[in-house]
Amino acid sequence: MKTQPKGHFSHSLNQLLKRYTLSEQDLQTLNAMDENKIVSLAYTDYGGFDEKTGNYYAEERDINYKLKVDYLKDEVGGVETLIMLPVTMS
Image (cartoon, helix red, strand yellow):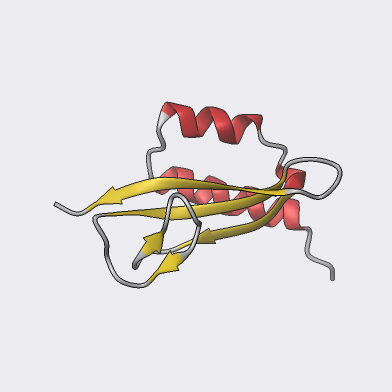
């Protein structure tokens, strides 16, 4: 049986949206995104992703993002990264 990425990404995003509240801007961006163009979805409970580079850091930092979505921006195959779910240390 072949797995369909769209179904997997859609299911995973829906599960995350049930657990977390996204900003209005992030919700609009997700709604505008074609799920067929998602090539990678990464989520973490520990550490987080850097907003500018998308790199993962295992250690807690002043601000980490828990969700990273890579998607095809255009027909040429250019990949864009969307970083969401900020977690700040208090």
